[in-house]
Length: 358
Image 1: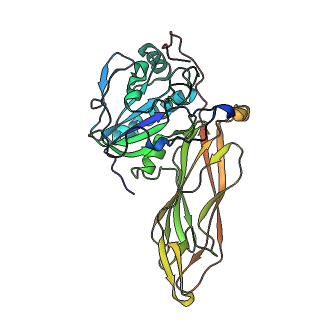
Image 2: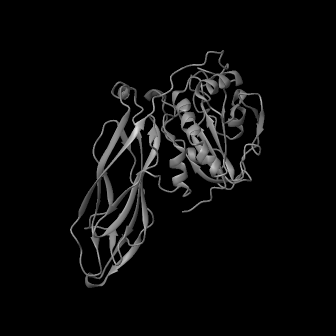
Image 3: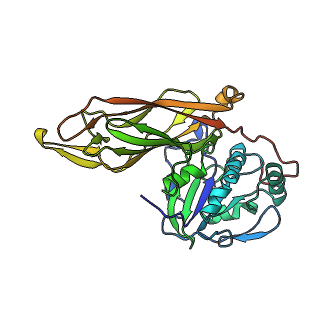
């Protein structure tokens, strides 16, 4: 579904609680029901950035909206800090799209200024003393005992808002290490096309353009492998639910340093094959396949990643195609992508951190 780029994206980048088995309860919190919902207008704020300038919800907006990122800390959280580098690297793309950008954490302005100066961050980092803004959004976690070190850690969440501050879409990450890249978000919203480094696939049955959303990623960065596919005239390929046929799919080669989510499919069409009186789900118009993945953020994999500067993703695009008379043999097309690895930022601030920092 296409969505306009004239939107305000609000990304909450928080920690998923890890409790001892004895402390867990059978109740599962549905974070999708927490905080502002689609159609709600978010609360306004008035916060200072690293240079002492005051910003509000409306003042961060560019001509077409803004990106507002709610983060845990730009001092002690390496995934938060590394994500700031991704955001900074995408500033030209955001400016071209008419989108402003700001980040909210509970860090002091001094801590933010230290981080911004060290890493060359030019967008506003907004200090939220006592996490008041996160509380106003209803995303502060209070489900554990108040004496726990995890008490008050916000739930992860991404909100897309229009220029009136009304939620039009929501994204949520299950783990605090996982951070959706700007490019992956823009792809999900239908506001980004293929990058220059795209590959073409041409077979007897289809044409495809394939690429990765990001050329540089860090452990935990959620990026996408994309296929834009056009079946040839009078040809269809099979969609999920087509029993007895090879459904089109990206089959990745195993890699212990890569964690992949299931392939995302668009809505299929129903094809009636008259000779067999058969109705099956297919794709016969242009369509897109997306597979979201990330480089492992597990502690046990840090040693294996320590000296790596890139990682190569390999696999095959598999499918079966038919026309109105003949079903062709299943096909397997090899694909390969290489992304550069950005190390996590483990450096701490050289100034006194905020009272809420760890």
